[in-house]
Length: 175
Image 1 (cartoon, rainbow, N blue to C red):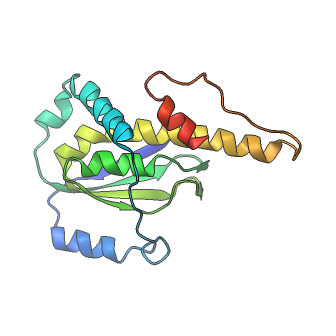
Image 2 (image 1 turned 90 degrees about the horizontal axis):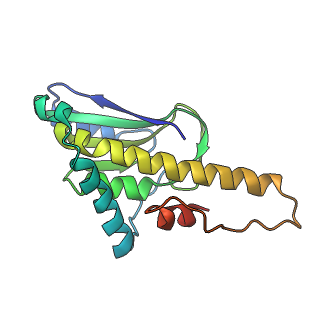
């Protein structure tokens, strides 16, 4: 599943950004979303960040630090999944996250599903892992959704034990 993050960098007036975010057209349509991750899931997600940090991303280290807004946009239609996990990763570094769509939602290509406000370096430090989680989980949810629509009512769809090592907890959650 293909998702993209757009980082609108530059010297931003933080109050203007927050005002714009609070008047977003999705605000009235989407109730606040509560993160309900288990201790095991949070631990795995933080482990993904630690693994990624070991690569020492030079890009964010040489980028001047300043306030920024990032948007996560779907590059193809999908059944969205992984928003709670991605929000947890971003919030864990002190970023403000506005989830604009819920897990399980049918999302059309081009729709913005999340906004992140905060320091551009923090956003860059987390974005690759967060997009990988969102993409993988949305891919599994999309395939399962298509399979259930395609199967007859007499057909049962079962989970398999064949999952991605280290990611099975999340893949089974979305199936």
